Image (cartoon, rainbow, N blue to C red; front, side, top):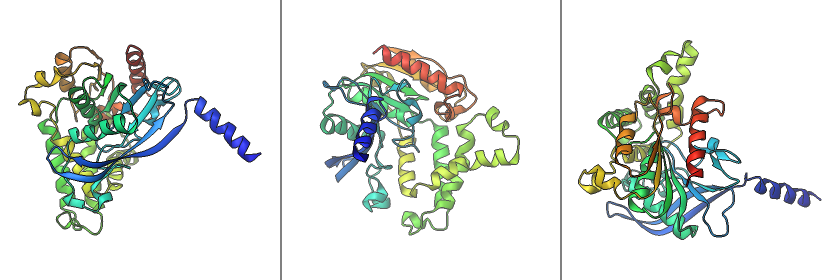
Length: 347
């Protein structure tokens, strides 16, 4: 009786588009952009919904620098932006964290190869084509570093998707973001247990300090000034520190290096238009009007260079954090959801 009830529950769960499956794809030998090789590269991911018979309804969601495969769950589900009644949604862990291969998981620590955004995308392409047997995605992309990945997908695999989802995007990391990352790294390196990166105890004190450095850059002046009480102020100040302290320090540092050093035009001698000319997919760009981490000027630059793109600025005081306000009642959530639904239905 119990098994019968369980079977019916699972069947209903799947029919409603709520099914979620964790998995790991293995690449026997992976070659990094630097030329270094690693055996048994793991690409972790989670799927939502059902892949149709001809494998034509898949969407790949990529994530931000400190995020993971679960970071955009708020937008995934029946009748949501990434509608699991229609789409088979694959949310992937980038190299270096989550259930994908990382410096910590291999035991290499500081000796793990410094990877790039293009490395992440090449590993994901292996997952999609060889692991899942999908030849073309409906769309690929995500927020922040997720948009870096989306752009690289469009440039390096132009026939692999119909659409690119670029939320709080930019063509490159500018000097301000580089300075932020360098300052955060210095916080970690000054932690007494850092030991040149060969620590036996995770330098969480430095990671928490790094999060405090990053916090004001993720918001706007208006949003920060709205934290009226000491409790509100301290909660905001320490929020990213709590996130960072949950990371192994080298995993975290290598991930931020990847974002810090990214520029889609680099393989094209710095010619952004040459890079964007490779993209065939239709794109949607949703920058935040108050973003200080990746200011909207970068998104406008992308919009001018893309052949077929839709552009709308998220009206928000949350800065870079506008991409995922954490509540389905937030104006930012409703704005992004509406635009994504309309875009995906046009593909």
